[in-house]
Amino acid sequence: MLVAFSITPLGTGEAVGEIVAEAVRVVRASGLPNRTDAMFTTVEGEWDEVMGVVKKAVDAVSERAPRVSLVLKADLRPGVSGALTSKVETIERYLGTDS
Image 1 (cartoon, rainbow, N blue to C red):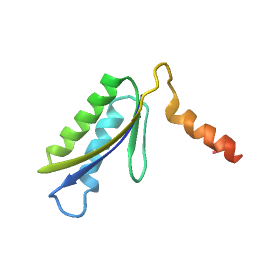
Image 2 (cartoon, rainbow, N blue to C red):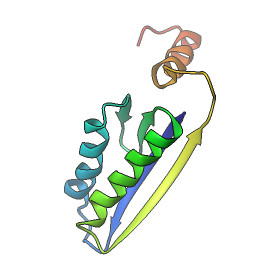
Image 3 (cartoon, rainbow, N blue to C red):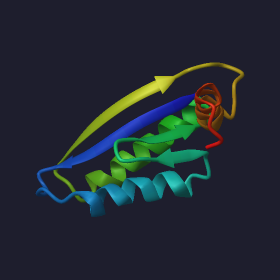
Image 4 (cartoon, helix red, strand yellow):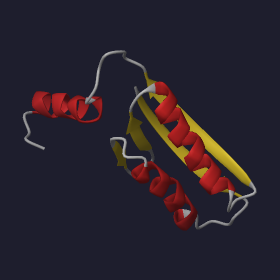
């Protein structure tokens, strides 16, 4: 499965990058395939392991913020792996680019 999620610390002021970095650190330490962009972090793996990483990331932010907002989108497709890169490669192929 792929899970794209965004964690926002609330009640900590306007600059949240340092706290959000704690969540990304948890994801990267998980060893699961992942990608972070300006809006979401996407993680690929099995249900329990991905949701465990999301929970640990939320917990890391919760340690530094009195309130946390979580937005999550999941793509569940049993038997498929490598979707984190293959989905983008498919679009690039249709666009005729090599990225």
